[in-house]
Image (cartoon, rainbow, N blue to C red; front, side):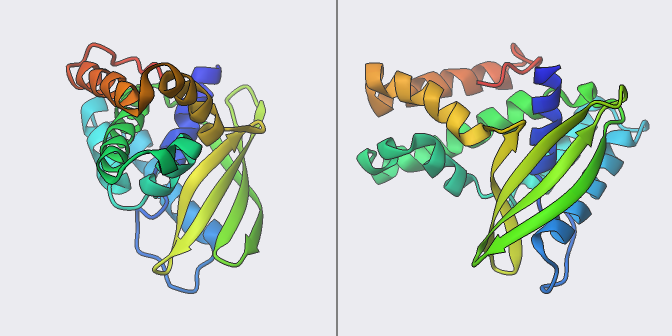
Length: 206
C-alpha cells in the first residue's frame, strides 16, 4: 500500500502545470487543474500503459522544479559538488523519479483527491490534499511549492508527514559518505540504465 500510495502521490506532484492557468490563479487552483488533467489520462482506458506514461511524462517535462528538489535531496553535498556534478545529478535524479514511478502507471485504481487549505508565504506555499482510496482510507499529502514565472511548481511532498526530499537525502547521503558524489552519480547512472532497459518496470523508488 505504501508503494502504491507513494506512486500515486508522485504522479500527482510531478505534474504541477499540465494545462494553461491564469496568472492570478493560486497554488491550489494550479495544482488542481493539473491533477485533474493527469487523472483524465490515467482513467482513459483507450490508452495503453506505455501511452499513459508517455502523456504524463510529457506533462511533467518542463513543469516540475527538479533543480530545487535535487538541491534539497543533496543537502550539504550540493555545496560540495561542482557544477558538472550538480548538472549530472539533476539529470539522473529526474530520470530515476520519472522512470521508477511513472513505470507503475498501471497501479492507479480510481483513488480520489480532496483539496484542503493552502498557506502562502512570499513565493512559497503549501497545499494540503488527501488521497481517498477505494477502501475509503484517507492519506494526507502536503505539497511544497515555489512561485516562478506565474507558475507554482512542486519541489517537495510529504506523505503522512514523511518528506520525499528528506527520504531521498537520507539514502543518498550515506552513499556520498562512503563513495563520494561521483560514487552516487555512478550508482544513479546504473539505476537509470536499468530502468531504461525495462529491467525494473515495477519501480523500486530509490
